[in-house]
Image (cartoon, rainbow, N blue to C red):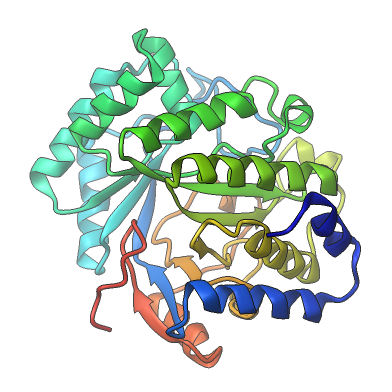
Length: 343
């Protein structure tokens, strides 16, 4: 278990290989069978309408904008069928914070999906759930319970960015604060709904801010045990207003060091994902020796990070190849990180 000071020393250290070896050793404790996992799913952005105007986002459109949309069921169903046809087992469904969609809209959509498709719904985010609760005048727990009963299987960790209010006030002043984000995940865990945790770093925060982020996640996991995985990725600056102030994106060395420190600090979260979306396949592959045990999704569709400049793409065979070439056995998993697929 790292202390905040030890983590700070590691972030300042130039011993990248030594830190990576420590993280790899911890990865082996959690995953001793030399398996690295991936998932086939699709990120369906059901709407791009949002009221938060986050400075790091190039995806959102104000309500009434010419490019604003809310996908009808037919479009979402088509995307789900395409996912299933490609061997997909789940959909990651997220959107902006739409000011006019009550909980009944989501309940109807989720029930319709479950009636028509055998698919896992890893959907919404803490800010979206808070928005739905506010619009529908419900508590957070009641909102999650109703969405769960309608078909929500698990909740992604999006909207976390950096869990420190000093940073959030600068990059996303209208979005939920740290405690509100944590409260959604705490409520979900108490209701038996598993969630993931994330960190978008490289947005002008300090190392101390990152460590605070990791500490509050470790504390909540100690309390509830409800996080299935942690996914860190680096800020993409293109087409964002924040990009005017963050002049350089994170390097591969910074990514690998951060990934390794996250693995060491979050010693009570089983799965750590090494991302190819912002860093590319080769860096993602190296991340499997820096604490990562999962390479994420083939991501049949992704609209948010790509609009901020991330243009990497991957097929299922790409992910299986980088896993094999790194010395691991590739295994397809589901949303809850169950690798029971015979491949």
